[in-house]
Length: 112
Length: 111
View 1: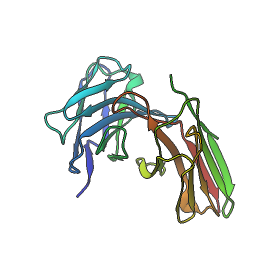
View 2: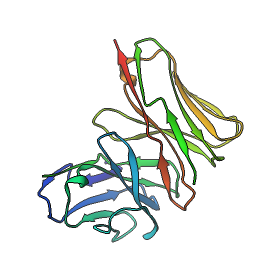
View 3: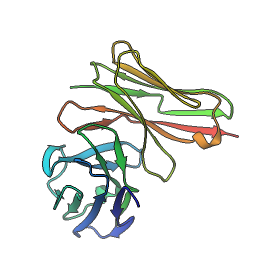
Protein backbone atom coordinates (compact mmCIF):
# COMPACT_ATOMS: atom_id res chain seq x y z
CA UNK A 1 0.00 0.00 0.00
CA UNK A 2 1.25 3.47 -0.92
CA UNK A 3 1.77 5.58 2.21
CA UNK A 4 1.00 8.94 0.61
CA UNK A 5 -0.90 8.87 -2.65
CA UNK A 6 -1.94 11.77 -4.80
CA UNK A 7 -3.96 11.89 -7.98
CA UNK A 8 -3.71 12.61 -10.78
CA UNK A 9 -0.05 12.13 -11.62
CA UNK A 10 -0.31 14.37 -14.67
CA UNK A 11 -2.73 17.20 -15.30
CA UNK A 12 -2.85 19.30 -18.45
CA UNK A 13 -5.41 22.05 -18.56
CA UNK A 14 -6.19 25.39 -20.11
CA UNK A 15 -5.79 28.76 -18.52
CA UNK A 16 -8.82 29.86 -16.56
CA UNK A 17 -9.93 26.36 -15.65
CA UNK A 18 -10.52 25.10 -12.12
CA UNK A 19 -8.85 21.86 -11.04
CA UNK A 20 -8.31 19.71 -7.98
CA UNK A 21 -5.54 17.42 -6.83
CA UNK A 22 -6.32 14.77 -4.26
CA UNK A 23 -4.04 13.48 -1.52
CA UNK A 24 -4.49 10.65 0.94
CA UNK A 25 -2.16 9.22 3.55
CA UNK A 26 -2.59 5.93 5.39
CA UNK A 27 0.16 6.52 7.93
CA UNK A 28 -2.08 7.94 10.64
CA UNK A 29 -0.10 11.19 10.57
CA UNK A 30 -1.51 14.35 12.08
CA UNK A 31 0.17 16.87 9.77
CA UNK A 32 -0.13 17.18 6.01
CA UNK A 33 1.49 19.60 3.58
CA UNK A 34 1.33 20.85 0.04
CA UNK A 35 4.54 21.88 -1.71
CA UNK A 36 5.13 23.43 -5.11
CA UNK A 37 8.30 22.52 -6.98
CA UNK A 38 9.20 24.82 -9.82
CA UNK A 39 11.45 24.22 -12.82
CA UNK A 40 14.53 25.05 -10.73
CA UNK A 41 13.55 22.27 -8.32
CA UNK A 42 12.92 24.64 -5.42
CA UNK A 43 10.44 23.14 -2.96
CA UNK A 44 8.15 25.87 -1.68
CA UNK A 45 5.69 25.13 1.08
CA UNK A 46 2.17 26.20 0.30
CA UNK A 47 0.04 24.90 3.15
CA UNK A 48 0.27 22.69 6.15
CA UNK A 49 -2.57 21.17 8.15
CA UNK A 50 -2.42 19.75 11.64
CA UNK A 51 -5.41 17.77 12.87
CA UNK A 52 -7.59 19.31 10.15
CA UNK A 53 -6.72 22.83 11.21
CA UNK A 54 -4.78 25.11 8.88
CA UNK A 55 -1.73 26.19 10.79
CA UNK A 56 0.31 27.93 8.14
CA UNK A 57 -0.57 29.48 4.87
CA UNK A 58 2.35 30.88 2.92
CA UNK A 59 1.90 33.78 0.54
CA UNK A 60 0.09 31.86 -2.14
CA UNK A 61 -2.72 33.32 -4.20
CA UNK A 62 -6.18 32.78 -2.78
CA UNK A 63 -6.97 30.91 -5.99
CA UNK A 64 -5.38 28.00 -4.17
CA UNK A 65 -7.41 26.47 -1.38
CA UNK A 66 -6.71 23.35 0.66
CA UNK A 67 -9.62 21.18 1.73
CA UNK A 68 -9.31 18.51 4.39
CA UNK A 69 -12.42 16.34 4.84
CA UNK A 70 -10.62 14.26 7.47
CA UNK A 71 -7.18 13.73 8.95
CA UNK A 72 -6.12 11.37 6.17
CA UNK A 73 -6.95 13.64 3.27
CA UNK A 74 -5.74 17.04 2.12
CA UNK A 75 -6.95 18.07 -1.31
CA UNK A 76 -5.79 21.10 -3.26
CA UNK A 77 -8.25 23.16 -5.27
CA UNK A 78 -7.02 25.68 -7.78
CA UNK A 79 -9.30 28.24 -9.41
CA UNK A 80 -8.68 30.28 -12.55
CA UNK A 81 -5.45 28.53 -13.44
CA UNK A 82 -2.60 30.65 -14.82
CA UNK A 83 0.47 29.75 -16.86
CA UNK A 84 2.68 30.39 -13.84
CA UNK A 85 0.90 27.67 -11.90
CA UNK A 86 2.65 25.07 -14.04
CA UNK A 87 4.83 23.04 -11.69
CA UNK A 88 5.01 19.77 -9.81
CA UNK A 89 2.84 19.73 -6.70
CA UNK A 90 3.74 17.40 -3.85
CA UNK A 91 1.61 16.32 -0.98
CA UNK A 92 3.39 15.15 2.17
CA UNK A 93 2.59 14.09 5.69
CA UNK A 94 4.41 13.85 9.01
CA UNK A 95 3.54 12.39 12.36
CA UNK A 96 4.18 15.67 14.13
CA UNK A 97 4.53 19.26 12.87
CA UNK A 98 7.92 19.77 11.15
CA UNK A 99 8.81 16.11 11.76
CA UNK A 100 10.16 13.79 9.05
CA UNK A 101 7.89 14.09 6.04
CA UNK A 102 6.72 11.41 3.63
CA UNK A 103 5.92 12.58 0.14
CA UNK A 104 3.48 11.52 -2.51
CA UNK A 105 4.60 10.84 -6.05
CA UNK A 106 3.78 14.35 -7.20
CA UNK A 107 1.33 15.85 -9.69
CA UNK A 108 2.81 17.52 -12.74
CA UNK A 109 0.45 20.36 -13.62
CA UNK A 110 0.80 21.98 -17.03
CA UNK A 111 -1.30 25.00 -17.85
CA UNK A 112 -1.55 25.83 -21.53
CA UNK B 1 13.58 35.82 9.50
CA UNK B 2 15.51 32.62 9.47
CA UNK B 3 17.86 32.21 6.54
CA UNK B 4 19.31 28.86 5.52
CA UNK B 5 21.67 28.61 2.59
CA UNK B 6 22.43 25.31 0.92
CA UNK B 7 25.63 25.03 -1.11
CA UNK B 8 26.71 24.18 -3.68
CA UNK B 9 23.75 24.37 -6.02
CA UNK B 10 25.34 21.85 -8.40
CA UNK B 11 28.12 19.32 -8.08
CA UNK B 12 29.55 17.15 -10.82
CA UNK B 13 31.85 14.36 -9.73
CA UNK B 14 33.58 11.36 -11.22
CA UNK B 15 32.35 8.07 -9.89
CA UNK B 16 34.41 7.16 -6.87
CA UNK B 17 35.00 10.75 -5.76
CA UNK B 18 33.57 12.13 -2.57
CA UNK B 19 30.73 14.67 -2.35
CA UNK B 20 29.61 17.10 0.32
CA UNK B 21 26.67 19.46 0.55
CA UNK B 22 26.22 22.05 3.28
CA UNK B 23 23.36 23.88 4.91
CA UNK B 24 24.22 27.02 6.84
CA UNK B 25 21.77 28.94 8.99
CA UNK B 26 21.92 32.45 10.39
CA UNK B 27 20.10 31.28 13.52
CA UNK B 28 20.07 28.19 15.71
CA UNK B 29 18.02 25.31 14.35
CA UNK B 30 15.96 23.00 16.53
CA UNK B 31 16.73 20.13 14.19
CA UNK B 32 17.61 19.48 10.58
CA UNK B 33 16.50 16.84 8.15
CA UNK B 34 18.01 15.59 4.91
CA UNK B 35 16.14 14.33 1.87
CA UNK B 36 17.09 12.86 -1.50
CA UNK B 37 15.11 13.33 -4.67
CA UNK B 38 16.00 11.16 -7.65
CA UNK B 39 15.39 12.62 -11.13
CA UNK B 40 11.68 12.41 -11.84
CA UNK B 41 10.96 11.22 -8.32
CA UNK B 42 9.78 12.63 -5.04
CA UNK B 43 11.79 13.70 -1.98
CA UNK B 44 12.64 10.81 0.29
CA UNK B 45 13.49 11.32 3.95
CA UNK B 46 17.04 10.23 4.83
CA UNK B 47 17.70 11.33 8.39
CA UNK B 48 16.97 13.82 11.14
CA UNK B 49 19.64 15.40 13.36
CA UNK B 50 18.63 16.94 16.66
CA UNK B 51 21.60 17.14 19.01
CA UNK B 52 24.48 19.59 18.93
CA UNK B 53 27.53 18.01 17.28
CA UNK B 54 25.57 14.95 16.23
CA UNK B 55 27.08 12.65 13.61
CA UNK B 56 25.14 9.84 11.97
CA UNK B 57 26.15 7.40 9.28
CA UNK B 58 24.20 5.42 6.73
CA UNK B 59 26.59 3.23 4.75
CA UNK B 60 28.58 5.70 2.61
CA UNK B 61 26.60 8.73 3.84
CA UNK B 62 27.72 10.77 6.85
CA UNK B 63 25.51 13.47 8.32
CA UNK B 64 26.73 16.11 10.75
CA UNK B 65 25.05 18.78 12.84
CA UNK B 66 27.30 21.58 14.03
CA UNK B 67 28.05 22.33 17.65
CA UNK B 68 26.13 25.59 17.44
CA UNK B 69 23.25 23.87 15.56
CA UNK B 70 23.59 26.38 12.76
CA UNK B 71 25.33 24.19 10.21
CA UNK B 72 24.87 20.75 8.81
CA UNK B 73 26.52 18.66 6.15
CA UNK B 74 25.92 15.52 4.16
CA UNK B 75 29.02 13.73 2.93
CA UNK B 76 29.03 10.83 0.50
CA UNK B 77 32.16 8.71 0.26
CA UNK B 78 33.11 7.16 -3.07
CA UNK B 79 30.06 8.23 -5.03
CA UNK B 80 28.21 5.80 -7.25
CA UNK B 81 25.86 6.46 -10.15
CA UNK B 82 22.98 5.51 -7.88
CA UNK B 83 23.75 8.61 -5.77
CA UNK B 84 22.58 10.89 -8.58
CA UNK B 85 19.82 13.25 -7.54
CA UNK B 86 19.10 16.41 -5.60
CA UNK B 87 19.82 16.53 -1.88
CA UNK B 88 17.79 18.86 0.30
CA UNK B 89 18.11 19.93 3.87
CA UNK B 90 14.89 20.85 5.67
CA UNK B 91 14.23 22.59 8.94
CA UNK B 92 11.57 23.97 11.21
CA UNK B 93 10.67 27.37 9.78
CA UNK B 94 9.59 28.69 13.14
CA UNK B 95 5.83 28.54 12.71
CA UNK B 96 4.00 25.50 13.95
CA UNK B 97 4.06 22.83 11.27
CA UNK B 98 6.18 24.81 8.86
CA UNK B 99 8.82 22.52 7.30
CA UNK B 100 11.10 24.59 5.06
CA UNK B 101 13.40 23.11 2.44
CA UNK B 102 16.75 24.43 1.32
CA UNK B 103 17.25 25.02 -2.39
CA UNK B 104 18.99 21.71 -2.84
CA UNK B 105 22.27 20.46 -4.27
CA UNK B 106 22.01 18.62 -7.54
CA UNK B 107 24.57 15.84 -7.78
CA UNK B 108 25.60 14.29 -11.05
CA UNK B 109 28.03 11.37 -11.20
CA UNK B 110 30.05 10.56 -14.28
CA UNK B 111 30.76 6.84 -14.64
